[in-house]
Length: 328
Image 1: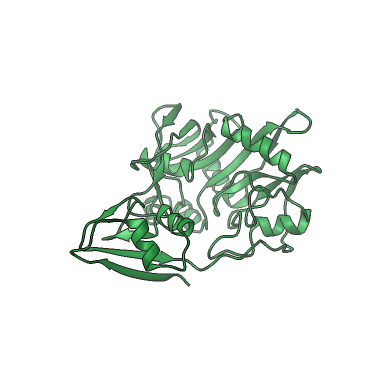
Image 2: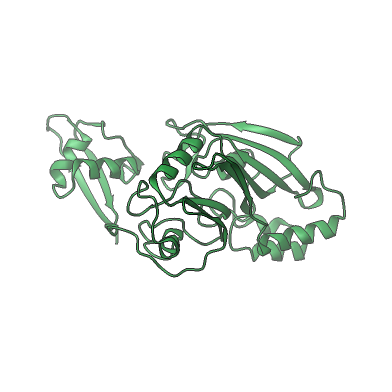
């Protein structure tokens, strides 16, 4: 359970940096642990996250939330995997929605990493004890194709490809709203939301460059919906979800960057029911392509659209009976 502490920096004290003040207040926490708490937005002043360099002058009340300790390492668990490809260097899996990628506070077991450890027995150690073999992530409620590595050399090579943006990553999303253009590019930085620390935002002062290319595959104008293909140039946390929400085109079923009540506005009662029954956001990692670190061969893998998403698209296509701008 997360423990919350509150400290008051009294008037009349000599000014002091926040991190130094907290090291006196929480002697059991190392400097690096305190820095991580601050960087993760778990240290607040009047409800707003602060920086380690904040100068306390007197009268400040500081709140610190310390999450429960994480286990030393992930444990193997027998969890079914849909394997698209595997060799002695890497493994490609089709991740279902609802599966967390790696252990973290609140999800120590039942993750993709636990499943991979059981299946592979050995994964690259560079990712750390809780993220062995993990080069990239998909959100819990995003489905689709992922790669994990079995040795450190393969991990480093793939990580370098992600860093220079040479990896092919294409997604499918159903969004509320119909873009006027047929294609476009969003080039807008993304960082941690200044107040809601579990969210990302394009308004963050510490945002990093984020680029999403998109094109419309199908338009459903009567229902104000569109099926969009998205290609990631960068891979920031929640990148697609943030970019399209801030374009006024939130992803269907997204509880964080959209609105759970949006489905109620759909005029078609059968479509409304289908969307309301969706237990995840309509976002699917369809294609992943990269150069194999050991063979030098370009490989590309595709994940078919899951049944829960395909049923909605099938209903819409049958309803409109119109040719799409492109197939998939």
